[in-house]
Amino acid sequence: MIPTVDQALRDLLRKRLPDGTAVLLAVPDGGQPAVSLTLFGLRDDARGRSAGWDDVRAADGTLLGRRPPTRRYELSYVVQAHAADPETEHDLLGQALIALTDEDTGLDLKIGAAMPSELGFPPRASFVLTVNAAYVPPVDTELAKPADEMHLGVARTVRPPAAPVNGKTWARKRIEEAE
View 1: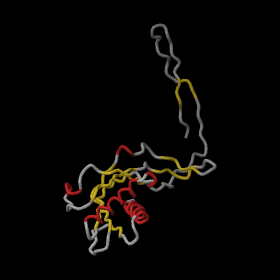
View 2: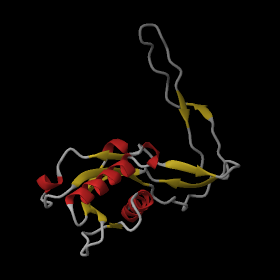
View 3: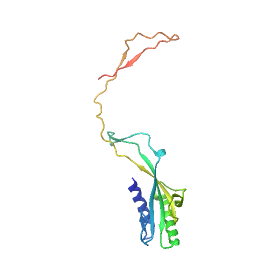
View 4: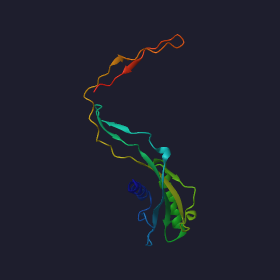
């Protein structure tokens, strides 16, 4: 799931940043203008967790498998701009901010409240971005064979009826499971 989110962010930025701007998962070592994404935090998002397993069915209703609950995680990145001068860094960072927060990204993104320098990153043009990503577990297809037949029956109990309580009598019944 993390590589998928990394790639989605890089693709999104590459489409919207000026040609020749590198989009990296590490701090660049050259003088080329770049935007870097540094993953620094990962949290389980229990609020976005499904409650139970889901049935996966064919078009005719046949049970194909069961899927465990989807889990959600919050991935936090420091987004930094790197260029030869502060003006270019600020311009790149502004373009990255617009690219990542535009409404049509399809990603669940939010800008963090903490400043990257408060997190130990060197002071530079940057912001914190948090992505809420889902992990959808694979479908479990190892299912028990469906029952061939089922028999239900109702029978009177062999115990004597209970004594009336406040003038009311109750008929006891028992459900028996046949083998």
